[in-house]
Image 1 (cartoon, one colour):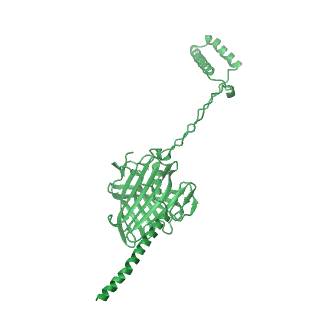
Image 2: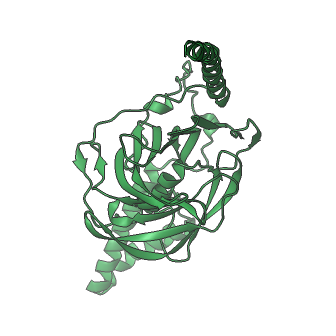
Image 3: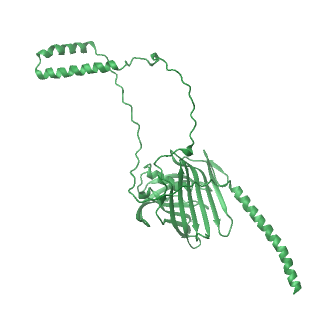
Length: 376
């Protein structure tokens, strides 16, 4: 009996150090893994949501402002000798003319006199600019470039918005959970966060945050960085990063590729679509195809969203008319494909999002409460 207890104590003395070593190694591997994936994510912007977004009549499509051409300047030539003589003759003949003819002649003479005054006030077209006196020279002071993050992008962008969804789907069986999309902007600096929880909120089986950070410009959203952070209840945490460095996109594996104009990431694509339709740059109609270059963590795609038609969805705000957009492409590997339903009466925001990995693995997000917005 004593011998058995002694052996157990001896085994524990051997096992405990081994477990500690394995634990330290696992922690070190995880630290190296997180370090390899890149530096820390950008700090999250914070705003206050003060009102519910109510359904309203869709805004009219914005019409581009066309430049007004300058009025052509008419060159007025001096009266010729025969025109002066004809004017004199008209004045002589007025005394013998019928009253109505005389009145017309008088009106014509008054118009000619007015025209003469105007001609005297207009400089001759023959005047050379070289004959004008030179203006005094002033020192040119270079204006400091404004910080793009502090510039207001204008009213064409919706205010910061939070949308909450109920999650259903299939991953080796039916799954349930919740999700949230947050669109935040401060000046021209924006962030989009898509947070997904599979399972109960207090102990999710899987959580994933997909975040986009960048600036707003003439072409809409210009991402600077995309981060995808995934945690599972049993397993290691994983983060991948895509960075947008001017003319190049750096994918998750470190490979560099040329960045096509207007390229978006997995999170920013939804708000880019909202902006295109909200501003009238794209006119919503069945059969429309919207080209949207997309940089996902493992590769780039020439994405094509097709508008399949209108669908009415039941929401906490009642039935909502939406437009259903589905990509004609299919992502490969572990990259995800997203379908979206946009509501014109809610600033073309996504009421429903379906994210697929393959035919059997997907999550479906459905709006579960009115959207919240910051003050415009």
